Amino acid sequence: MNLRRDVFQAIADPTRRAILMLVASQAMTAGAIAANFDTARPTVSKHLQILTECELLNQEQSGREIYYHLNPQKMKDIGDFIEPFRQMWDERFNKLETIMKQYKSKK
Amino acid sequence: MKQKTNIGADEGKQDLTITREFDLPLELLFRAYAEPELVEQWMSNPYSTTKLLKFEGKKHGSYKLQSADAKGQVVFRANGVMHEFITNQKITRTFEMEGTPYGVQLEVYEFEYVNEDTSKLTMHVIYESAAQRDQVLKLPFAQGINMAHNRIEEILGNRK
Image 1 (cartoon, helix red, strand yellow):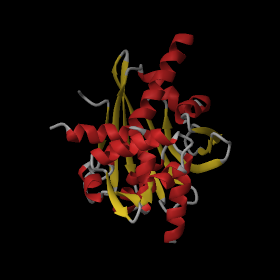
Image 2 (tube, rainbow over the protein chains, first blue to last red):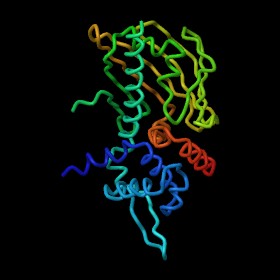
Image 3 (cartoon, chains in turn red, yellow):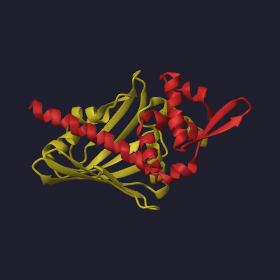
Image 4 (spheres, rainbow over the protein chains, first blue to last red):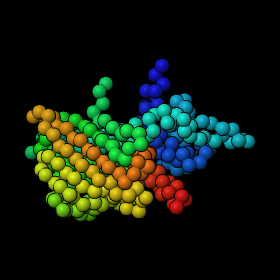
């Protein structure tokens, strides 16, 4: 079972992290979520699909609309938000490393 | 696969430790923290540009930085003072995000020689309380995209 790894892949993407942040405060429809991004609507749909598949988001039917909301239990499983925090630093440090390698070769 | 960046954060504690090994000689790693132009470069990303408004890399010096989104709108400001600034060894500084309820954090950076091409950074970050640390841990969801920053401000604003 590689679900856990999939969850980490899901949150490795900045747009998907932003989506989670958005729905953390209130359940939203796909349209309302997409309105917050410059990205094309199908791309946002794809992100929503991935987040739903790894159970970070739950879907709830309300009349004709489907609302997405955060699955707090799943978020907790990730390790109380530490993994995204770690990835942010990892990305930042990778950048530092790349810049300093170029800097070194320029000297 | 061994992770290059590791976070140690015990439950209920008010501090955390970030460690990272770099494929860089110690001098280059330290330089990335000591030269303002370099700090600006690695702190920026496709979504936001970081500028150092002030940077005094010395004992009792201070710094002030801001990040702007792609449209040039400032979304984040932070500042702090240097308590210790020892080349290739150690930086002790405070860090405060302006206009947020996260208080002031104390950051101790230790730079270590591993071998000629490798160095290690240990960041020990101490928050005012365990609750504050946990709040900050949740923040990275806001990183990268300005919209999310605004969102956080809205959410925090609503809670005031």
